[in-house]
Image 1: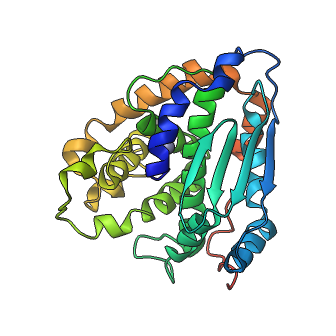
Image 2 (image 1 turned 90 degrees about the vertical axis):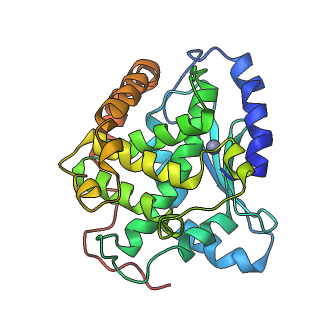
Length: 284
Ligand SMILES: [Zn+2]
């Protein structure tokens, strides 16, 4: 996900030996996600390691992403990263650092925000968004999905599209929770940044924020109409969002739909993954 490592990985993805060696449909099977909570290197990550295991975060992702029919196993793992906060995909493995999980926890609001984002939804939305972004890279690679445009934007679109398929209530909570991760950027309406900040393989965070909101509004302007009326998504952009969403939906259905186990996907999308509305998150 971030940033220097992602630059190197982006080059690696182009010539992934896994994708090159395997036709996407050879022995493709659902339920090929394997998970691993790697023991933390440092005692300071012990608590977040225990929390991740106790909340079964990887097991949930394993079940959600079991609907994809993959030609090989895909490993999801939590790891220590020597102080670097990151998540990435490479060589058949999606990895997320304990440092990153700490950041997600630290971004959690102390109480439900003025826009109705609960602390639990902020954590779940941000975590699911980043892991689904990495899953996007993984799926593109393992299924040899052609990608027009920038891979990082495509991975964001993949993640956002997935979040929007979980029914109105969960979709809204996931999207707003994910949007909360950009809080520090959108709280400053004037952006000053060095020119090279715009050269990254990832779009700048404020652009990713607007892209996220735009796809959500394009998917359902009733559920997400307040993003425009409350001024988060400018009307000028909003008018194009239906079309943007339909383009992503068409790409997903055409290129990735055939690789989904429909029965499993339906069950996953009808499951309630988020804590009960209004429930207080567990005390840390
Ligand atoms: Zn990425």
